[in-house]
Length: 225
DNA sequence: TTCCAGGCAATAC
DNA sequence: GTATTGCATGGA
Image 1 (tube, rainbow, N blue to C red):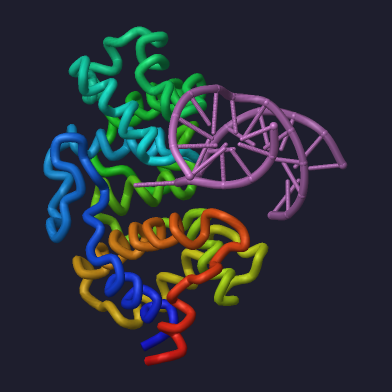
Image 2: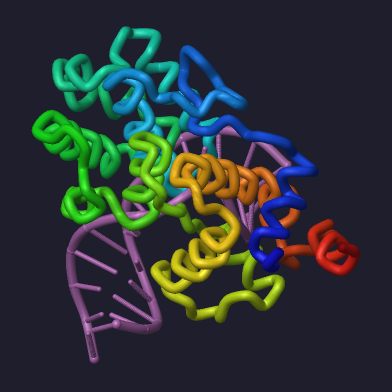
């Protein structure tokens, strides 16, 4: 078993399945990988992805609750809101002026496509590499690994990537290693979904404050097979 | 008070 | 293509 997959195994043993991406009416759905089931649920994930940019998910949940409370979680409902109403609802997530624009951009895009390609997503102002991969992985069950700041810190702590590694470099490194272990496409999506979620859960505890990685239990796990 | 969060786009070299 | 900066609220 390679180091990357071993890290995945260790994290899964510690924290168990994470059940991402959470939906307002469902919450975290551990062991149910069929979500999202409806187009509204797909959109809710896209909305959450945009809102969570550089923000904690608890703040995002407040914003989603604000929208839900006025029956405006859907894209059609959001379009009917005034810009100020939308900004007010998503205010807890921060950058609300920018994100309101991003959301409206995205709705325009979302309404014209069935299943987006990565390239199409990246053409939407407000959707960068991580957001595109999050949308594809959690919204459309595509095997696109999500790389975030936590992922970099964790891998850097074990000298598995260079400090200046690009998004694409980190992603290809991880996927190559994972793909050596997992051959089935559906299983691969589940592992990608869980792995990213596990990294976030773990990194919140051990990679949020400096020195990053202090007390990280993966170290002993890698030593003792 | 300072630091950071499940980033992105615009700008300047 | 790489580095820097603005965006903003909320919790530790």
